[in-house]
Image (tube, rainbow, N blue to C red; front, top):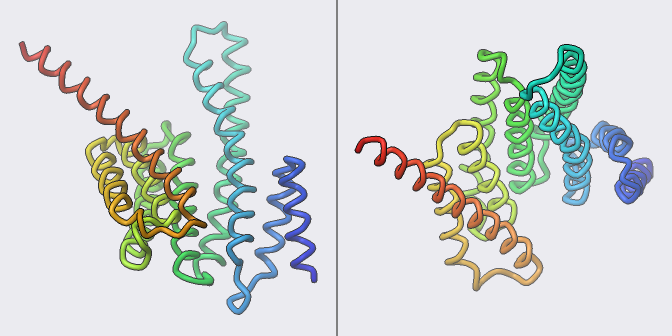
Length: 248
């Protein structure tokens, strides 16, 4: 009964866009979950929505402040922006560390099934990736975060490739985020393109056998993979063209 109340409150928090409250409800729900009664699919999605929104809002704030910090500001303005940026960074690290603790201490250890295991490993990769974005001034910490993110993504990908169909939204979503990690964090555009293309092509081959209930989700993620692939290839072509021009 307590768990049902927490789940209902979390849903209402989502409806009201009270995502900080939603995080608290889902943390409490995780606390009462167990190996015998792990989070079900709905609860996993609620947890993801809660943290995605509280972290996403702060990531957006950080990008604005980081861009402003690069401008030619007066000393007092620069000090103000720097203080705000530091506050947002501390909040981001706190929230990401919070969800990573839940994943490492509870959720990855007691998944409901293979899909849950992949879901949680992908989350671990994602939240380490978000911390990498703001760790530019700490090279050692940044390198550790990158390695941990890649390890989580790769473990999830190995399981997904073996256990899930190429059209699974969970597998496709993992491929999408892992390819973004290669492109944005590791500065490896060729690896990013290879993963995106392979995942898209394999999904196309199996699309005719996809059930109606997942078709929309699968094709939406496939479109995102294709959009990224188009953009990244265009940028690679531009870089090669500039290099050729420079050689002349």
